[in-house]
Image (cartoon, rainbow, N blue to C red):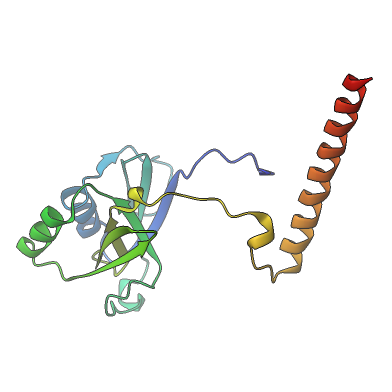
Length: 178
């Protein structure tokens, strides 16, 4: 698969906050992130946190009252997902902390993934799950439903490259036979 931008990994996510202080408390004491040094040259309030191989950059909203109201918990909304070992201790801890949550699950090929969804203090959705038990299976290019012309063009280009490689392999195999 092509990597035209030579990306290595996800580095961080940035979240605009009603209150950086409340958000730091949540991400540190509920999700286990720890504060890391943030460049002093920024001219706005914020905090950087890190754990689990990812950074969370919290940015103070210029107008917290204008941020969208926190709605109901909907697992189909945008969310950040963290893998965990066992759901039972997580549910117990969220109950102790009076954090509202909903549970859900998905099953594929006899494997059940348990999910737990809740909001951070700003209304961003958090998912905790045992998703790592579900194998990540790449789809063959032919089985992907393509609707975007850019995607179609990229797929055609990839197929052409694969055909060229296949022709080169055939030429080498033929040369070896001679």
